[in-house]
Image 1 (cartoon, rainbow, N blue to C red):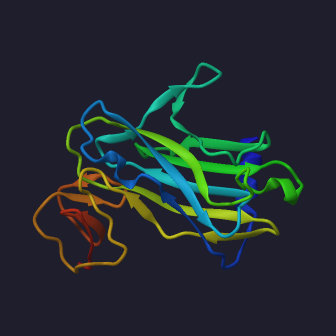
Image 2 (tube, rainbow, N blue to C red):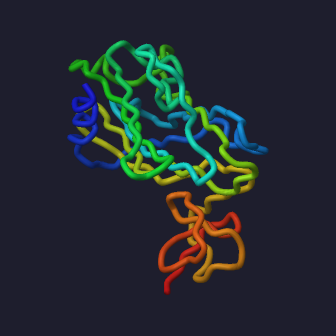
Length: 217
């Protein structure tokens, strides 16, 4: 089943489409202290309902996705379906990414061959609305860094797909800026794009003092 879900997403052919995912409660992680558990709802903003989607969630050091006990009595990441759009043939796969602490791959697809019933529309027929419920847990106090949502795409009826811009959920004042704001880093806490704190910024893009910056040397 997992291979089927991933294959449906992977086989889509690239075209331009108008769609994106967004956090419904972006400020949910403000004042996030050690031991706190808070839920963020991921919503779909689109003019067309997809039949499949996938994305990666990367937490900074000190934040992680909480665990819950599923029907098989296994402790698994607390990333679950949300909203009134799913049918019995819509499967959700959540997998930790090997070797990367706090990083998860999420994929959803319909196994129904009929396009008329495969799309992820709400019961009112509209595509917009809740898609995922993600529960985060704080492992440390006062973490200031973004939770990154990256490499997201959705597959539509007819075998098309669209990719989305990366975005972030702010954690206690951490901020992701869409554009590059500087050529050099300033003094302060430095995080790489995986959300990991580093002591020195080399060539690449980092989050410094709550802003995304690029280091060219």
